[in-house]
Image (cartoon, rainbow, N blue to C red):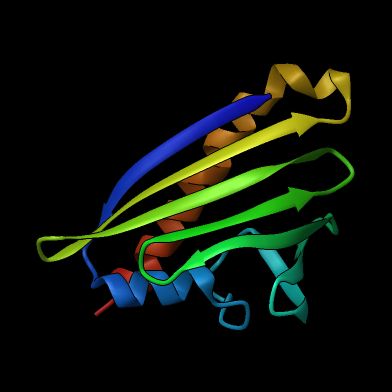
Length: 132
């Protein structure tokens, strides 16, 4: 299993950051996805601009503290967990993603890919939450 963690500070209140991350309907700020299809309160699918579909099952939803879900697509399965904490005039976030690859030839690229995805997500989230 491959695991990466990213920690960041966002200059926005905890509620704004939490709602941005957990909303399945307001995702226009995300540069990595084209659409989200919601099945029910615990299951949804994200469709990337390239057409990849990833299925999600929410496993933990502790408002303003922790958000976690299982992920599965044709290339990997795994878990993502986000921890949230009010810190001064902003919000501290810690996101951890752990995946198991389904194709052996993806292993040399997986850690690099995850880190790029995490940085992109954080940059998008900061743009969304820190805008005046």
